[in-house]
Length: 130
Image (cartoon, rainbow, N blue to C red; front, top):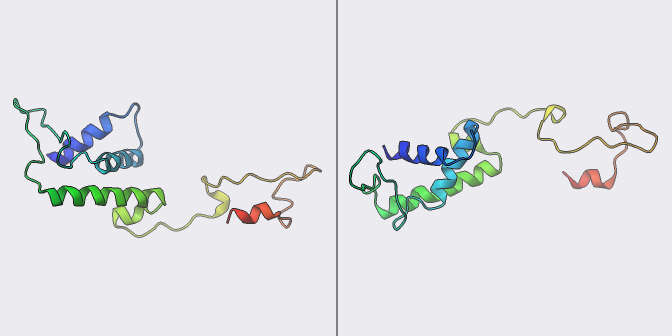
């Protein structure tokens, strides 16, 4: 019940629809911010008449452990290690030619030759990105 409330609260507070990956990151961000720690507003059950914290049964240590784990998961996500968070093997590496996250642009020479035709020529700048 508490997990469902937490996920719903995190996703519904977004200003626009999110991809599953962004939604997962947002849930980890909410937990990492300390929303479940003692002294925070907690997770109130909207179905109960009186305010009732759904996390009341958790110990302080459990709350701190979950918050710390969420912070560590965010670090892994930031460094493209989502497979470790999900407990699966890493996906095979894509070729650099087809990598959509490759931010390097093709270099143009003064005579209009693009970077693919002048592949053998490399400046010092090109090696700084590795």
